[in-house]
Structures are given as structure tokens and as C-alpha cells.
Amino acid sequence: MTSPKLIEEAGPASARPPARILRSLDGLEPALKGAVVALGNFDGVHKGHQAVIAAARTQADALGVPLGVLSFEPHPRAYFNPTLPEFRLTPLAAKARALGRVGADFIAALPFDAAMAGMQAESFVTDILMGALGIAHVVIGFDFCFGQGRAGNGQLLARMGKAEGFGLTIVEAVSHDGEVYSSTLIRSLLVEGKPRQAARLMGHWWHIEGPVLPGDQRGRTIGFPTANIALEGYLHPALGVYAVRVELDGVIHGGVANFGKRPTFDKKDALLEVHLFDFAGDLYGRVPVVTFVEFLRAERKFNGLEELKAQIAADSARAREILADPAFALADPAT
Image (tube, rainbow, N blue to C red; front, side):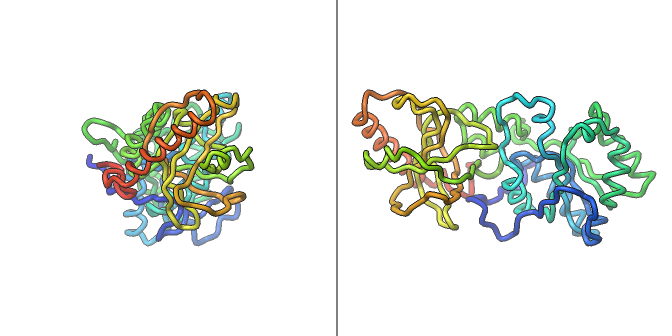
């Protein structure tokens, strides 16, 4: 199957609004009942996910009903393995924006708790899909499973849909040159320091966002002021230096960033430090969107500030070259 068209994602700005977030289906407003609903976690909203949403959007338009996504918070993997390191590509707010860009009207992010984990697959269909949502049609990916013991699948939905009167679309695997798009593979690429390869699978550049935190302002003393951002709720990519793009109030700035533990200063906590090129404003309290474009080098310890300053200058020069290269254009990470 060929991959869908890439979506532009410089950050949250988009012609389409974010998908509306619902944390409960209690008292669901009548206008949202009878929707076409896509089921899945959609972490990263990659090309495979985009194919599922595109199929659902086609059905919704044909029926003249809204398109909803039914997902879970926290991610079931985090519920069953709470001690695992953070692995999310897109926390809920970021996911809602990405889903809105590709056509979803709302996302029902239901709590994944002991009751949900223990729900039988048939009960999930009758109580949630039919009872609460009153679905007209459901769309899933080829490998989607649900319910206690992951007993629910396309066969069960087909059987129940035929009996109860709702439609079903199963979207086959989306791949390119034998490479199936998956969130697991994207995570692996980012952990290996390969953001461009990850972007090819996502159909958009991977980015994070978070408030700028107070720091020790050491960067100012060496001519490279940085904005400090904690990657709370996000997968931690490879430690090291990256060429990045940063969106502030709809304006894109080039920059260089270090994600690491800052061994030169004997720090231990991982932090993202971003230096924006040709920018002199105050960033404290603001929430920039940082897009990872290319991995430049691994983090290392330096013998003093002068050596560190020289390396940051070299990293900045290299980052400027990369960001000016049409091969790294925002709209087309697949080239």
C-alpha cells in the first residue's frame, strides 16, 4: 500500500483546529453521537495512523457525520508497565492537534484503569461503541486488538457490526520499500539519534513542547543563551546535540539544542537546552515547540568553558547549514 501524502507540521499552527478532547462519554452531546470512530492509540500520528484517519474521514463525509477517535489515557502500556521509561511520541494535547490536522473532529481519551483493562471485548462494543457513542461505523488498523486479554479484533467487530447494524473498515498495513510504519520503530530511531529517518515514517517532523524553565544562565556568559525545557511526558531521544527549528507565536526560528546531562558541569538530570539563532527576546514562561531535525553529535565532557564555547560555535555553524538545506525543508522530511 502506498503511503498517504505528508502533512505539514512546523508546530501547532494549522488550518484545521485540534481535535476536541473528551475525557468522558457521560452525557455525550447528541451532535457527536452516530459518528464514525477510529480506534487506536495513534501515538505519533504516523503514516499508518494517517491512513486509518483518512479512511475514517471518507466514511464520515459519505455519511455526513462527525469523525471521532477513541483512545486511552494513560497509554495501556504505561498502565501495565508503570516503571518503564517515558515512551510517548505525542502526549494528549499534541496528539489532538495532529489528529485535527488529518481530519478528526474529536478524540475521546478514556481513562485506562483496572475497570477498562478488565472489560470484556464484547462489553466494550456494546457499552462504549454502541451504548455511549452510538457509532455508525468503526475503523481500525489491521493489527488493532482490544478488551481483556486483547480478545477483541476485526473478526469480532465484523460479527457484531453485522448483527447490530454498524459498519467496519479495516485498514491494511501501510509500508514503503517493505518498511511498515509503526510507533515502535519510530521510537527506536529517535533513541538511536535518527530524527530524519523517524520523520520519514511519521510524515512530519517529531517535536516536543514545554515551558521554558529557570536555569543558571551560564549560556549567557559564553555568548550562547539557552532556553531550558524538561521533556516531561515525552520519549527521551538520544543524548546529544541537534539542529532544531523552534516555533514561537507562529514564527519559526533556527537553532541548535543539546539534550543531555551536561557532564562538563557534573549535572545528572536530562534537560533540553535550546539556543535560538538571531533571537534576543525573553523566553521565560513561554512554551516553544522544538522540532528535531538532525542529530549532530553525541554529548561529551569538555575541558573548560573555552573548549565548550568553541564546540557550540561549530555546532551552530553546522546546524545553520543543515537548516538552510532544501533536503531538510519543513514540509518534506521524506526526501
